[in-house]
Length: 357
Image 1 (cartoon, rainbow, N blue to C red):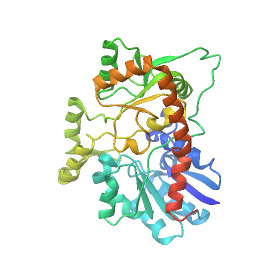
Image 2: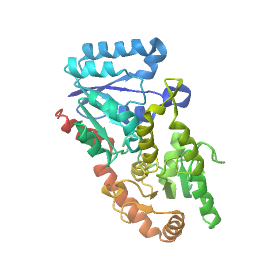
Image 3: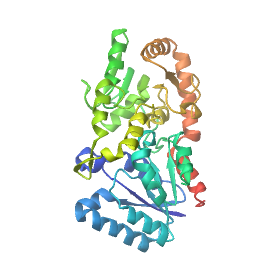
Image 4: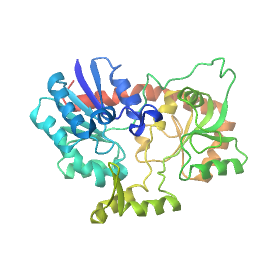
């Protein structure tokens, strides 16, 4: 039995009104349901609200010393933990420490690079970051997003969605080029609809989202960052010189080089969680291309990939007209996901790499 203490934000951006965080729903909920794992939660945002950052870090150290977990599994958002806290646990206790670094495509130079050396092991989802970590002598594990199989699974017809189907859908906040893609499809006479913040249809709850994934003929996924538009790049320029850190505005002109590296990284396309969540729900995925996406699925066999808006429209028309081929891709994508791309697979790979199993 592996004893894991999972340390992360419980709520989205630490705000209870926004619901549970991604890491709570997809990491902690999987860890506590995995065979051979005994998981407990250290909700750092709750502790900070109750006793402040300084004391919450002290509480974490005491918890590790009392519980003696085999692994402190962290998912850092910003500077909710102190570097001294991680360093102490890594060097002064028998607990191994690990952090899952997200967004290394653009955060490596301004965040991950300075925090990673404090942990026993770290992971990255960015294929190009691996050599950067190794060049610094940091022990990195290449991993990737996945699906929580306890949540993301084919939905059954219910009274609410009986005979319900969707044509072309996208679920997620409307930012960057996403609205332009949907508008372009509509201009081509294609039945596309966006759901979520800033869309006319508005936000949908988690249950309806899962239904959309299962019952849509085509689920879209966009892999561009919000900074890949003219307006986004303008906002990015301000971030080169000014940033918010723990609620305070700071000038950081002295960090212009890593900030420039961050800016360049935002122009790369990333694999998103949706890449795995849609196939896990038995849905057809048509996604934008992204960093090493074809290491995980076979294009045209398990998912479909578009290169630009014209290719997107062309493939939407094709797969709406070729149902048999579309359903074959759905089946293959679902089977590949269950076989290789759940967080159970990812975490076991990490445990093996760390000598825990």
